[in-house]
Picture 1 (cartoon, helix red, strand yellow):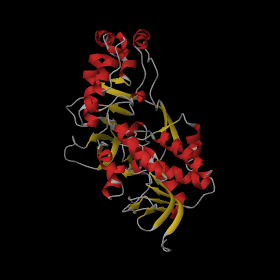
Picture 2 (picture 1 turned 180 degrees about the horizontal axis):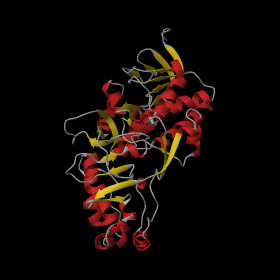
Picture 3 (picture 1 turned 90 degrees about the vertical axis):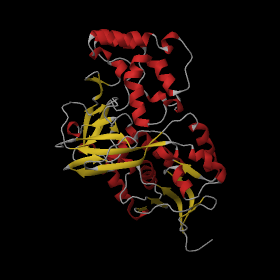
Picture 4 (picture 1 turned 60 degrees about the vertical axis):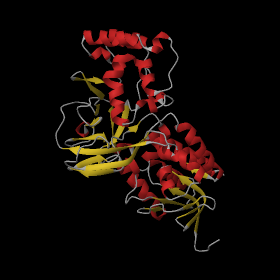
Length: 403
């Protein structure tokens, strides 16, 4: 072996929430033989923040800390104490029929006038799931099967067309457990009782920093790692057999949190995996700042109308103290020219195409055979909230620390 190689137990690729949390938990378990490589000049990945117009803006879109995972809260509070966070009861709305309705729509139809409620309820009554029809495999068919034609055509289909910008028939149904679960009975009951029904989605309560953006906790975590975090250090080569990265770092294990597409670009994958990686689809999103104040009490608003390019507005003055203006999220394929601050996230959302799981199984099987640990949104090609990514990273660090 080349004696000039730097040897560590773990070489961690990427300093987003998964990579940082894994490294931080290693340190808390007494392990300091690791290096984290990050191509950007600061840590945090999609959860970074910048100060724009005097207040924080999260460059990866709206990121909020879910309060349900105590292990995650305890972990983060060691770096950024609870006293530095504000707690909010989530207000997310959908702009539809010239008004804002609380999300999820099917749980809040009672907020429409009676005539509209009847229209939606009649449509849901004809849905395939209510009739007991088999569950479809394609996303566009599944939405109609679950929610009926009217909610599908006025909200779910146009909204998802905007956010993914690929034919919805190419997307599978296997990830839809993430959506709120509201039965037809619960929908009727909520209309009669004039209150939300069913199981509400994630972030019904969330934390956001009092002074900083969400990126502050990741900046601090990066500082905690000291010289073990190497910023501005892109991954340019990987020898998976010998576990040598950038021809300079020899690791016992590579922990991957960067997209497999990046491995393909540096020719670090066997030829047999190229078709699988090329089949993994993702969307790019532009985050644009607008100095206009939106007259709404919502924290964020979903926008299904194709008359506007963005699919979501983040009203930062409702969760970020002293802030002005708002920011929008727009699929990069739909963006107009930027008129002010813009940050483009090339890798924003993994897309759950019908063939994704089969392609990913082959990639992960190969990675396991090479002692490469896949971790996080882009290695597992899964749209996970940051609290989920943190929890999984902590668990993975605990596991390897015992080996």
